[in-house]
Image (cartoon, rainbow, N blue to C red):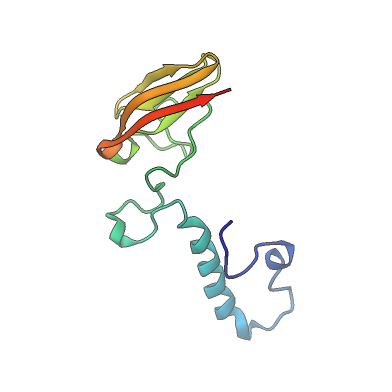
Length: 135
């Protein structure tokens, strides 16, 4: 488990309290920015050195979609950029693992009682080899 500068709990959520001195307000804002960045940057690009991909998942960090997003991301924007290639989705209705190829969802594997993928090339040319998950 990652270590953070400050715990994010009920005490943190309710600070500063109504009536607290405004004198430390600038410190509270800076702390909030650090605390958010510590958590978000674990799995997202967040600075200008990332080539304009701010807010997107780092490669290999995203959880596969588990519904039918069609051609859209969870935030409602279109799946239409290079960074979207390789996104995974599991279709629970058809027990099927799919990958976004830049245009449409393509089936990689129909799952019955096990998933066995020998080789999969995802966005950016990253190759995943020999994945075996048994239920």
